[in-house]
Image (cartoon, rainbow, N blue to C red; front, side, top):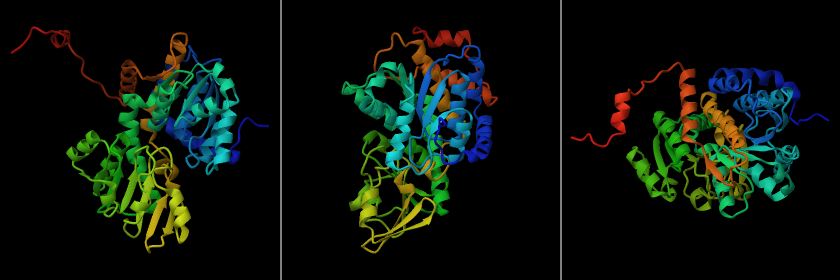
Length: 418
């Protein structure tokens, strides 16, 4: 039996072309390969990873393998796998179990396969691998040195596990690196979400009323891109600071019950369930478009639409029309799953270069400190953020000024005043 399960291994040729193109736009990962080419600090370690199977992820797994790791991989969302990329990864020798449009049973079967390889390190995006190991394979915990988490939702789940006293090994919150959230979440999610909406609908965004639920890093990025396309942007929030920031950034801010009556296009970006539900559905305009860019498909009440519509019809790939009993149409994109990856290609390679460089350096941090690091959820060191930013600037051919000795002395003094 092959050490993989993908939709069609014959798709590998096309997948490799996409990976090669992504690699050209990810210079920091190339620099890290060169930096550690003699060290090969991952040699002898098994890695189980579940991050969206995209061309950028294939560059990451290629780098992990180059640095000596034995890599097993699964997707972290049923609709985000690119089948040609999965095939290319299989041909590269990655133990990959992923294909697009998985049902729940198959999704966790794929997760189980990578856990059964007895990993020493886990790379997670959403925390499904970590939770699955703790709940279903506790005997595997003794082999695990540490792990990383890629996204906001996963970090929140990990923090809850740690506070409950059930987390069994240290995990580094890649998502909390400034070179991750301030680039990947804002610029990547912003561009990818708009891309997904346009691919799924072919609608004009200019002139539309565009509702963004949640003004965290992802919501900020989506709002910026929508405003850049000359939409009227309204933000809904529960956090007073984030609501104030949205207002000061020039957006209208109001509760979802009010926004529901005004919006033409909705994007949820909260990481919280039940953002748009029955009470909102009944206030929506006829022909409204609903989408989600949060990690799980719980922000828009998909089950209510499925169980209470009069008719359902797929209009285009990733766009389903629900005729509701009260006489209005609702269009839902990508089953309410993250639209940037389900209906488009996710984040551009340039920003994933930063995120995945953090993955590599966090793994090194975990291994270098494996004898002293306690169980917990750790932020990325500022020194690492600065290193990655410096490498990225170098890859872009950009130089910065440097402080003089006199400037440094002035900054550190306290006796120079008016």
